[in-house]
Image 1 (cartoon, rainbow, N blue to C red):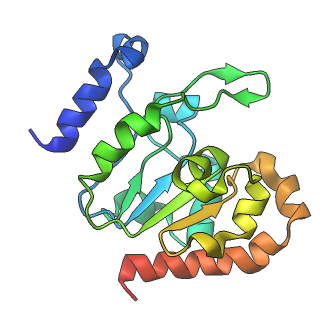
Image 2: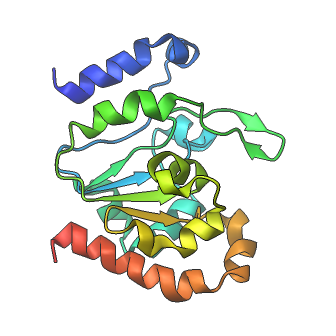
Length: 195
């Protein structure tokens, strides 16, 4: 039994996740040993959890466009890890999905990351991932963090969530597509192909 399988079993046996395990719901993440890039999002949506596949929606299509990757490459490469801040759908809130549970990433990410020694880049999607991984981002807005993305390179690349709900933010902040995205694509290619 490999280490990731053991970690997955420990996650499912954790009392914090008992409700999901009783329903037969497994944690949704991927951690190939050869991963060079880790995509850190918020948490699976309800459809992702039901279908057992992450980023298979309009947000995922836009994320792949931003990453300059097609769907086949995104789902088949062993150079990409998907490690959300919570591996289970957290439920519905008043204005969208609930946030990832506190302490979840701190408990499981370090163990999983030890199994991926070649990681060079963390793509931090949204405020929860950015606040967890970038210590100096505390007290800053998502806009400030994303605008100052160069401060966090080469290890971290913070971006806004590619949700259709964020179209207003993208229209209000045209610098994201004009300046940030070209550098984002370039950094991904550098890491994936060791340029």
